[in-house]
Image (cartoon, rainbow, N blue to C red):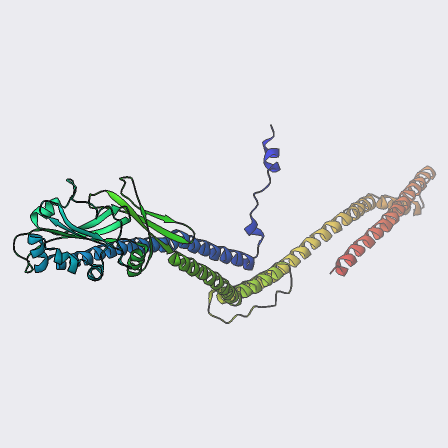
Length: 465
């Protein structure tokens, strides 16, 4: 398995940032930064702010239900105060003793009951027997068919029998055939709050739609009522897109859930919260764009353009352009310091380059001279060889012998055979000298050619730049 081929086949990991300019990287990074800030801000709004508005709305709805309960309690309290004022009355105290019909005819008419704001008025003795009862409509005063008022005696399990025995007031709500009724009971005293308790006065007011509207107005909420038949007590909050509903059960005087009051509140707080978050998001987005633009303009003016100028200058110098150009930055920040250092570096590089050129020129000239000398040496070698050969041959010529033979031949007393030998010797010596001279002449011609070669080498070297 060829590991090197596998390694070479793997493509390098792509890094988009490496192919970007500094300006593009700054723009991308700033855009990512502001995008992250916007995302975080929107997440905070969705996770923290909007739920807080919803919590405020829920708390407001629960507070409204609390106000409904308090308003209902105040209505019961108001009914109980009317009942206590009416029960602590001397004429009523006397009636409970003698049961004079004139009292009924005078003080229990519709006109007399209207100021009490009660649908039901019942007089009960200490044994729970109903001495008198009347049920009328509040608006018309007409008789009202009410099952609770038709009773002749309080039920044995009626919770207020103990209050009746102890002479204590009581209040609560009860279900009737006409709907839910607010009921208050007060002990009957002699008019000064003393004497023996002779019974209890019961006053009731039906919780009609008009009464519910008054309670809702007092609590600043729209309220509705429905009766319940189970024994489950609850308070529940239900939210829709536009309305928050709160449901709460209320117990009757027996301690059992008897009705459910509900309120509907428009989700104005959530709506305002959504509007506030929307406006905040738009403002944040707009601010981010403006700040991003201003920041880029400032960065581009303060740093990016200057860095680009330094980069272009460095690339031009690296590509061999005119190195005499200078950035000439006179500022005090880091980019200006970098520019000045780069100018100084270029000056030093230029000086170093000139020195290297000079040294290279001298080294080239030396190499050229070395080559010329080598060529001259190669050209002079045959010259010296021929010269040595010619010199050696000329030195070996028998000039002295030929001269001695010629001198001897000039003498008169030379035998004929001796003269013949001397003449032959001179002839041979002359031929040898003649051959040596011809060889020397040829060697001289060859050396002349070698001299021309040396001249051409020198001329070529002198003509070289």
